Amino acid sequence: MKAATRRTLLGATAATALAPSLGCPALAQGAKIVSFVPQSDLAALDPIWTTGYVVRNHAYMVYDTLYSMDGRFQVKPQMAEGHEVLDDGRTWTIRLRDGLKFHDGEPVRARDCVASIRRWAARDGFGATLMAQTDDLSAVDDRTLRFRLKAPFPLLTEALGKLSSPVPFIMPERLAQTSPQEQIREAVGSGPFRFVKDQWVAGSQAVYTRFDGYLPRAEAPDGAAGGKRVNVDRVEWKVIPDSSTAVSALATGQVDWIENAPTDLLPILRRSRDITITTRDPLGVYVLLRFNHLYPPFDNLRVRQAVLQAVSQPDYLQAMVGDPSLFSECKAFFPCGTPLSTGAGGEAMEANLAKAREMLRASGYDGRKVVVISPTDMPFLAPMGDVTADLLKRLGMNVELVTTDWGTVLARRASQKPPEEGGWNIFHTTAVAPEFMSPASHLALRGNGRAGWAGWFSDEKLEALRTEWFGARDEAAQKAAAAEMERQAFATVPYVPIGTIQQPTAYRNTLKDVLPGTAPVFWNLRKA
Image 1: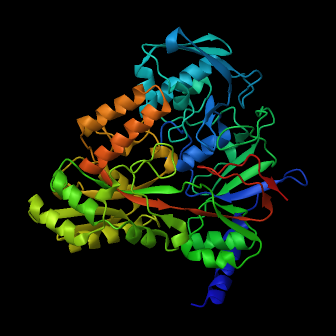
Image 2: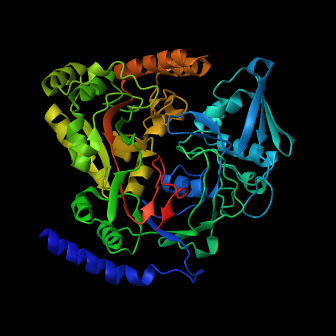
Image 3: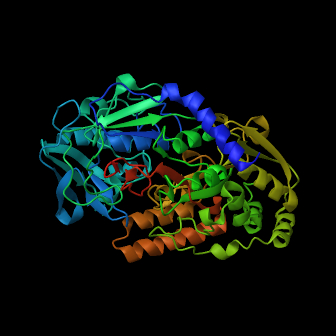
């Protein structure tokens, strides 16, 4: 089909499929409304109960945090006015800014923060580590909370300001007292937007309005930190699963912003002078191939090392996004461009298939089947299954590629059954760089076996190095420990790093001052 014909067809599709559904209730004349197509449907509201990025993005609109990270990964106070550290680092007292209030009109109190931190820590590895070092966490008064620690924990504000899911968002005590194993069904925070629950239609739309009671910080916005000043009246998330229809809606002005612009349709968008195409997060998305370490053949270190030796990162990255400007190699276990990334040990990745075949023959691999599970409905991940299946066959392995929807992949990868009984040997996934930038939040770099992330990798030395990192007293010591963790990971291969891709985002030029960052944010931007 010619490009012009395809463009015409897409426009017609948008006009017929979307025009009736993109309206909104009557608002004040001249109201500023932003229509946004999220990466997926908002099917849940609780950012602690699930780590899904779409829920995290929703939560950044509704909630705020005690601390946040700026664009240089420096932790800054957000809801906190500041803190004091006493008793040789064993007592931390945090003071809230004056005048903070929730969307229901109630003031934000220290006890809300205490309950929120406890619920978050029950679901988060960094939070669990912090609470394991905490003798007592309590509200001293309405604006003051206090940690009494068993031992100094220099990373306390890094924990409370972490960017990766789950984020320690602050919610009212009545909601935060919900079991962390149960999903909260409300979205009441103290953030810059209110969630309009009675206009939420799963599979269709979510609506947010400016919270006039929000008190932004005085500083300029920077990353997730700084002043969150809202210049629009309403934000409407429109769920459009078909990428062609979403692109048409953007081209015809029926929506203002597509979070994830499909790379195969970028040429159509580039023809329009009315549309800006950019990459929201300068660090990009980290990509990996994960082994199941419980069963053969990848319980065998030498087999994992053979695969590591064989992998050519560009083969995967090209298949995922096509455009070389949208990907980069990254032979590191902490994403390239993040503070702890060193690539120590990365020379083990030579993309040398002949050498890898020799390593596999020497490993004792017995020809058993390797089950690779891959989603059909995730555009970036779907090609990875094909690339891996082809690579392993050329390496000399017996491969079964199982393709299903992403939900089924998630359910199957949670199974610890043998591959021949419904389990698996390999899956692929991605993570935003901040998710894996620190040993505190890097689930794939844990060596805690069956208690850990899917794949259930065991490595006592890696765990000891993680503990050493937590105890480091300065940046130099932290980086040294992180370099040793990367070197150890290249030796024992918990997974294979594949590189980094950039996810394009596209919006109409009527939107101004759109901030870059890990999540799409709607403060600071203006609509002409």
